[in-house]
Image (cartoon, rainbow, N blue to C red; front, side, top):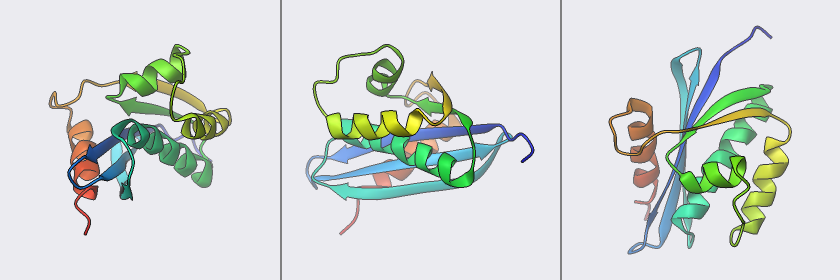
Length: 135
């Protein structure tokens, strides 16, 4: 396979009033947006959605046969836990799944400031929030 530069923006959202979360990923291949996915999950938390979005990004990479990517997230919770060994006090099930998937990949985690005008972060945020509006 020719080398493809893959960047994936990830985001999670949660609506306490609806008790529905949403995760989203936006995939760029060689700088061009090629796919985006979003999905709702009931009875969750914002942090669980942030982790789930990165899990879904890893699953997509493995499914498509990619071995490396840049993961963009506005979640310092994800960045700190995956790159600085922050203590995992909660969400151990998701952290275990993410670590197992990430161990198969060469990932570079990049923090992007949320709501700061980054086009793909804003799109990913909108998709995650929109996913919380299911009936």
